[in-house]
Length: 178
Image: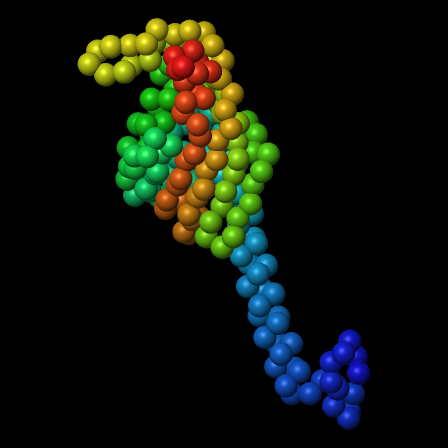
């Protein structure tokens, strides 16, 4: 008996045990391959937030998002397509041009899914367009809000993204909410 496995009389493992070992090796490879994919996707996501988003390098968004990505926003609306997503992201910088995400204190994933918690910061320094040619004037107030992104990945890019943050806290911090 070696490690509790049944051995044949010649000192090797039985055919059943060899088959089980091969099955376990395949399962281990599947697990390590999945882990490597999750780590690669999280590394891509770190680059997305820390560099692409924070520096508004929109021409690089395709490195992390599919051309027909579906994005689910904190206010409940959803969009489809990378160009629309870029326009929505650009709008966040109109009134707070220094918006950035520099940390992901929590990040994990499983299979085709990743999740990161980040801290989005900035200062409300420019007029905020609210439609019909109207604007909210800047308050000069800083914001620092926790946010979470859950990504569904395929072939190294997100095909769907879920964005979460507390919009009420965000508005309160920039001085326009109750």
